[in-house]
Length: 238
Ligand SMILES: Nc1ncnc2c1ncn2[C@@H]1O[C@H](COP(=O)(O)OP(=O)(O)OP(=O)(O)O)[C@@H](O)[C@H]1O
Image (spheres, helix red, strand yellow):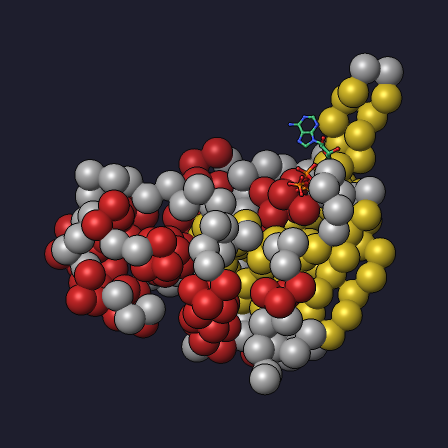
C-alpha cells in the first residue's frame, strides 16, 4: 500500500472484540470484526436487533474500547490514547450523528456546529467561520441563525451531519440518521451524506432500511457480532 493510500484510510478496525458479562454467560456483542474505511468510502452496517451494530459504531468512534483487537482512527490507535487524547480524537477526527441528534436547543445552528471546535480551543471567530462553511456545504447557510426547534426535521439532520464533519474531521459515524423523517426527506439526507463523503470523508452508517443502504459503496451484514456478509452497493447510482 502506498503512503498516499495509508493517509486516505480514516478507520481501521482489526479483530475488534467487545464482550459483556451476562450472568454466567458472556455476550460477544462484537466478535472479531475487521473493517477498513477510506476517504470517499461509505459503508452501511445492517443486521438484526442485537447483532452488534451500535457496539461496533461506538468502538469506531472511541466512545467505547474493545476488549481485544485494535481501532485506528485517522492514524491514531485508540488503545494508546489517554482519556484526554481520546476526547481529542472525538473532537478532531471522528464525528458522530446520534439517533436523537443531540443538538443544543438554546444555540443557533452555527453555534451548535461551532461547539466542538471551540471546545478544542479554536477561537470563537475561527470556529464560527468553520461552522458556516460546514453549514454551507449542506445548504443550510440561510438557516444558520435559527435554533434547532425553528427548522425542519431534515434541516436538523443536515445540521447534525455538518457538526459531525466540521473542521478537519474526516470520519462520520451515523446511527440511522434519517430517523423519523418522511421518505423524500430521508432520501435527501442520504444524498447529502453521499455528496459529503465524495467531497472528502469516510462514513459508517447503521441502518435498517435497504433503500438507505443502497447509497453506500459497501454493505456489511452483522449477525451475533460477526460480519457474515459484505456486498457492494450502488453508491447512490440511480
Ligand atoms: N452495555 C451493555 N451491557 C450488556 N450488554 C450489552 C450492552 N450493550 C449491548 N449489549 C448487548 O450486546 C449485543 C449487541 O448490542 P447492540 O446494541 O450493539 O446491537 P444492535 O445491532 O445495535 O441492536 P439494535 O438494532 O436493536 O439497536 C446485544 O445482545 C446487547 O444486549
